[in-house]
Length: 487
Image (cartoon, rainbow, N blue to C red; front, side, top):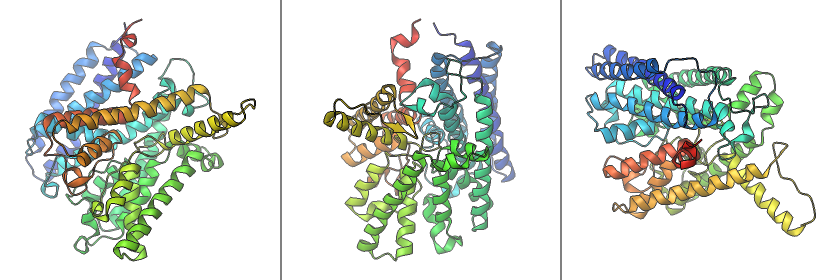
């Protein structure tokens, strides 16, 4: 059996930390003289007490975490934090049901951006700030997990990104604290920079800090029902904030490992990263395709057309989910195009979601390797990634991930259709959940709608799908096998 004490201890500490963070939106409501501060105070007391009990009952020194404990810790900590984060959403004046509160918290922490809430423009400041904070926490959390934990677990080819200085044994904790410290400082710096620029562009301080957090986290929660479209109207008196958002969404979707390398003086290596170059080229190509399409068909001028195209294409591709307009009105081609690129995602080790660029590169490399072996069966051929040879283990991990990813997507879509959802809604809701994008397609869950009207069973299905997509599927699915729990 797995020793659960280290897992329970760390999960308890995470829940206590979540409770402490609730004091920030509580103060925001107090300063605004809004009675919703009581919801955060009560939720902090409940969560803090439970977390303290878990930590105290399992207190002891944790030197290492084994691989199996690492899998269990990853899933258990995210579920515990989501459950704790949902409490103030239920206790507040919005009075969300447990299902809606859990869905909203899961969407926040997984940086999906799908919402069941309307009337954001008049919501309490603490409520809006808490949603943004959840995405900010989830964004940095997934970066740390992708760089410090997942490479050791060899999930979906992530072993490619194991640091050269890492201990290849089952010990997951040594060195992770140093990595986490670097990442957090970089993350905070980018967030602060984004906030300052938004504020200088005319956003209020409150809107600027909320959108800075959800932009760099590629999350997509907004303080406005119209999302970024609100700030592009003449009444908002803001500058080209969509351009700023596009830049910082790209920054958040690039691997944080290259920022660490650059700060350590290895700039040439960070600039030569093939994943980064492939991602930026794909973002440019997608923006170009959509930009040319809407300029020709809808008579946009070149600047406006490419601003709209690049913002929305990058938002969907990176899984951010902001919308500056209802792009479903751009015709069937745009709808189909956005549906396809929502699965692409950003880079491994970034705040972004989706399949990840490196897996697409490995899949293409596997295809060409197979073709070369068919045409020249006696020639020794080796595929490489960033100058390193790709082993059969990496190929198997990546291709298995592809199969499980789309099998999960198909299963989720079929289940949603059982509840009477039309084909577009079922497919796009399942796709946007597993890719952690946010808005889907169609009138119900599209950029002009939200998820509030969906049946309860659908919301729970989508919540599970969001978690599976964010934690790289196998991290959760491996725990469902009997062999995981046996010696």
